[in-house]
Image 1 (cartoon, rainbow, N blue to C red):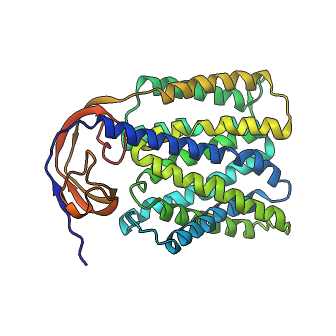
Image 2 (image 1 turned 90 degrees about the vertical axis):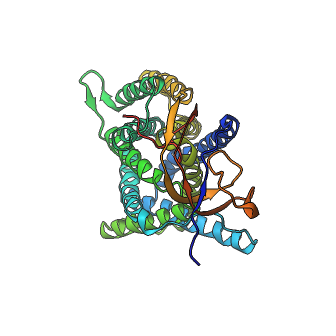
Length: 369
């Protein structure tokens, strides 16, 4: 059956309340994603005692793919009606880049984790904010306000402090540089995922999990990185489901409302969670350099989450498909049978100009140049 493209008249109304509600929900999802991912670094450090880095990277993503596939199966058995827009051929290039970067990033991270402490790696993960924000600015022209620039400067400086293995000779540690490389890959991947955030997040996570998981598994097999420890392998799959599957699902959902740069900034709580868990597990005494970097990271994160973005902006005419309801502020087209029920169909947004607090979500990706 051919899809009908609905149109709506550019009716102006008070959008602030609805926008704030969606933004708060998105922030909660982003922080939940961070909390789930935060446990991955210290637990991965333990798993690396028996699982080689390449194989662990594969198992983490395969755990995400299998776990989220089970979630889909349970939802179908319970009679849950699908309301999300599926991934189409148009999104395939973004999906391919996302999978390739997700093969490279965890391999760099896990090799780096074998060369440096878990708490340092956890804190260095905050550099992903800088990478994501700068790529979002340069490639997708997302706005970066004054507070975000402060955050970028502070987090970059703290990352440099953590990366210096010998302060006297200004020598950077290989492990830290590998982690920063992983953060750059994930920063680029976050921006490609941004282009998929309009689609069914469960489908995106499953494709991401199986694609990156099997890709990493091939590399592990070629390099002969095996393990026969079934208990550790099962633990890796479970960690992958929680820290990569559920976490990525919440992350993609959050990106719809917050955009790539801001979702990544709320996600910045993950490294601090990882640091706390690492201290509890490994009982390592932090250095003064680490403590200084931690304080700087906290200040930088504060600037990130307190940034606000308001200006008069124009919504150009656009046709797309995603989950929505007709009672919100951007979907005023008429379809009385589904007025307040979440659903997905192709629809047209006619040109409209207004002003309110907003983030670079799927309806606010206007050019800021």
